[in-house]
Image (cartoon, rainbow, N blue to C red):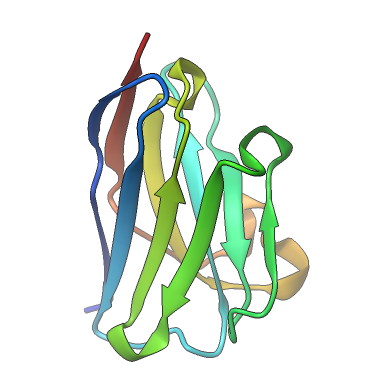
Length: 124
């Protein structure tokens, strides 16, 4: 059974940092893009960041550029999201996504596998 398991979420004050991790079980995703999405209460799930299969290309939503960094460790079958200078508007459930299609990395429909999500709450 294929599973993506996120961890690292929590409660942090404005300006603080968190590092999210996502580990794949059941198979590897070394040949495809992976991404992070988030969903705030009452809102649709939105794209945050994506990384291509060899980690040479990354893309971010404008609102997190310069604050968030996506990375991956294929040997550990893991994906990471380093989040710095967090703001209250970053509060959401963050989801890891895998098996992404290169032309759709910013779309929820572009991925075949999803984690269960981890809550990030930024207090003002």
